[in-house]
Length: 335
Image 1 (cartoon, rainbow, N blue to C red):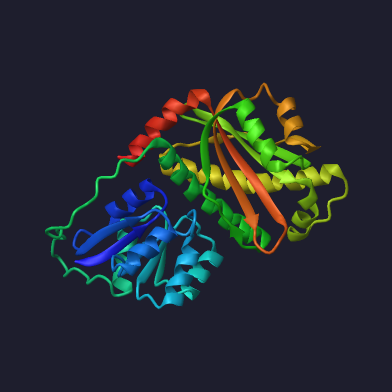
Image 2: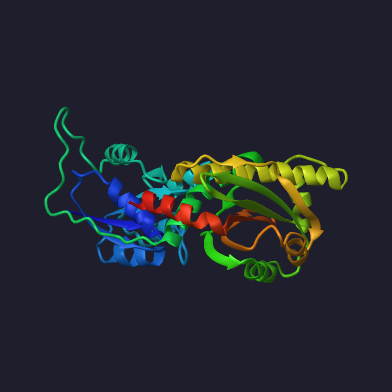
């Protein structure tokens, strides 16, 4: 049996990936939920082959690859990530990864990648593929928040790739936060994070199969000149600046919602992006729009542009009445 390490902070992602493994691949599976756990397992000999995520807490996939090289650990690594930026794929290959597969991993694509890098022998033509005797498949119980976070992780990776292409930059991605908030709690959390900065906000409504909500993009006023420079624009006045923000919101929100819809098999109808306010504090933005949201399931995503003093905060606010339907969709995906 080949010692295989599956490393991802999401239990759902590990479950999907383990299900995608070729039945005829003789592996003994160990799991890790972050880079530190992965390195500890590899040092013990549990990771001759590693399927590695990039976006993780404590130590991300890039850091794991760099540490493997620094310690001279002979693991064969295939990266499986929702961060599909061309820059991300180039970086992991430079750090020694054998291949890159986008999430969620397709079983045929994974098999072809394993064959291409010499980790799996092709099955003889016409022969049935059967399971390896003695190979155990872990029974992973995935909770709703973990599953929704992973769905959003894949979606935000696709949005980041489009943003990177439009701006000509590399986008650093976080682990999304998923919480059920009263709006007052969300307001306080955001106000604490923004520390009184002046912001402009764009929202875009969406609805599909009893799932509805709004996506909210927060842009920091202090960074608007850098946004314009990257877009090669020279906005003259607030109207043109607002148009720039609406265009940016269409890119990020549209790609993110499309990624979520594809995974949970929903078709969202999207409204036109609307400017909620310019040059205001988070407190003022929520005061002006307090009737729009009550209790909400909130997904928080921050996009940081590497090499620039620039970041965007994207909130996906699902209505309270959407939670039951969204839960059923997520559970169907998990099963």
